[in-house]
Length: 87
Image 1 (cartoon, rainbow, N blue to C red):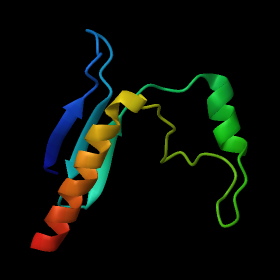
Image 2 (cartoon, one colour):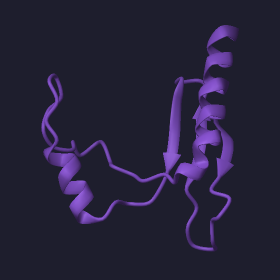
Image 3 (cartoon, rainbow, N blue to C red):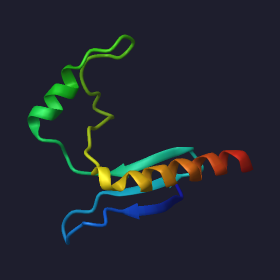
């Protein structure tokens, strides 16, 4: 796997580092973020949407990314789009 680093939360401290990467090979965004509090995770797990199973599969996770990182997420999306055009 070859991850391309996009950015890290500019307000990060020594022990917290929400981060955005792009996996151009798999055409995926990769996020590292904070674990949600149990109440938010339970709310996400109980959310019902047509075509979506209730609950969070063992292979998935809920994470939190601060809004101040939106520009990094946009940059990651742009990088994936550029990589897709090159293919």
